[in-house]
Amino acid sequence: MAEREQITVRAELRAGRGKNDSRRLRARGMVPLTIYGGEGEAVSAAAPLRELAAILRSDSGHNTIFMLDVDGVGASEVLFLDRQIDPVKSRLIHADLRRLVKGQEIEVTVRLELDGEPTGVRDEGGILEQHLRQVEIRCRPNIIPDAIHADVSALRVHDVLHVSDLSVEEGVTILTDPEAVVATCAVVREEEVEVAAPVEEIAEPEVIGKGKKEEEEA
Image (cartoon, rainbow, N blue to C red; front, side, top):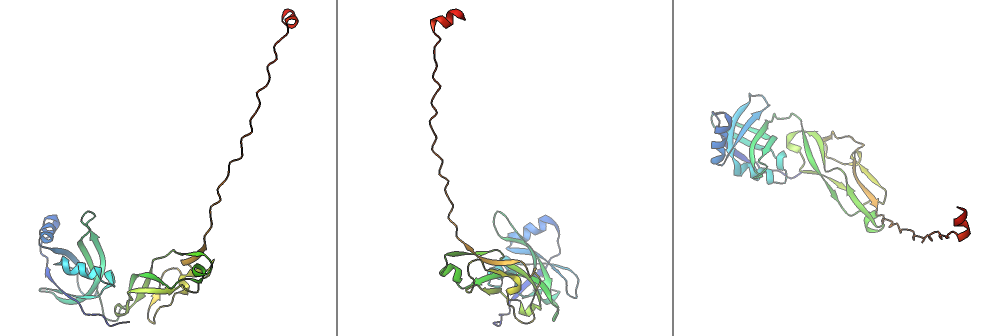
């Protein structure tokens, strides 16, 4: 795993509470934060939206470990625990951060990426279907992978790749059900078009009029 660049974000201690205080912070381009866990108490702070958004857009995204330096409190390693996104403006409006403890394992969710072209697609006319796009893992914070890669080039038609088939580096434990299906190479079936049977013409019954003698007898 490549060495990650150390990111430091400076934050200010947040004294106010409530929606009005949060609105004032956002008007200044700041995001309200709450830092939990580790060996300290919960801390309310605010950090620049631009810097936090850049972290979320990076390859490691919400699993990025960075240093948060809060004025008057000090610096600690953190990563995103939860985040709230404005549904209209699609921007971060609040975040919960997890304070990390050196050597302590954590549980996070990482994305799954499929590599290669399956034999069943290239030579057998199948299609690759990805059923699982992320898995939950447990590891030390400093070895969280950006993604877990799965080589699907050997998959033939009808083959199935399970979570148990994934390979991860030493120190990483996958918590997702090992029997969960990651990907399959399916057969492309052409839908049969039913042809309606021709409608037979039904002859109308012939109406035979009564003879004069029969009418008189009636």
